[in-house]
Length: 191
Image (cartoon, rainbow, N blue to C red; front, side, top):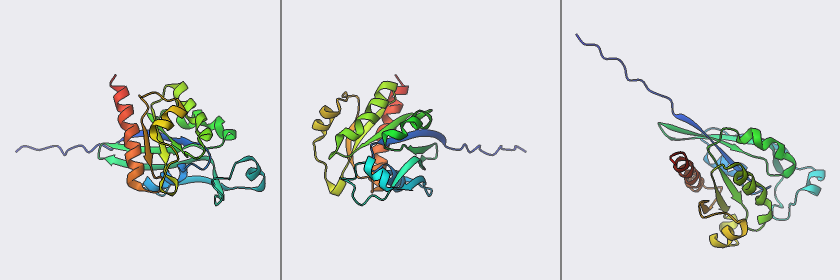
């Protein structure tokens, strides 16, 4: 009589990815749209003091802000699970970025095309550390203010950095943007 050993079912490979960008660009929204678990957020009320520091011109209805990070996860397939870490957008919380980014395979830099200045720090961060990243222009009100070519030029990113349009509120759109980063990271590991 022959006995067969049960097939070993391996858990999916954990892969860390960072979602970054300026204040109010849609990082928390993107994590919440795609996460298969209730996302962990560290939202705090925007106080009068913070309102004086953070530019609320393009986000007048924003009442909270991320003060540490957002966390969510997404199973891509039975072999791969993304763990998503959203950074805080204000420069005063930049001291946390090294810890949040450590071990990440790549990043998605979300951009509000109405205020490109807010994303330069995130683009510079990934470029200077050699971490693969893509730029995702969030389509606020269903539109972006610049073409992808204009955006690439304004951000001064190479052709090797994917630039896409997405909607942080739509699960499929966020998934597609994250898959662009994942593909880029996998390509880089094969080089």
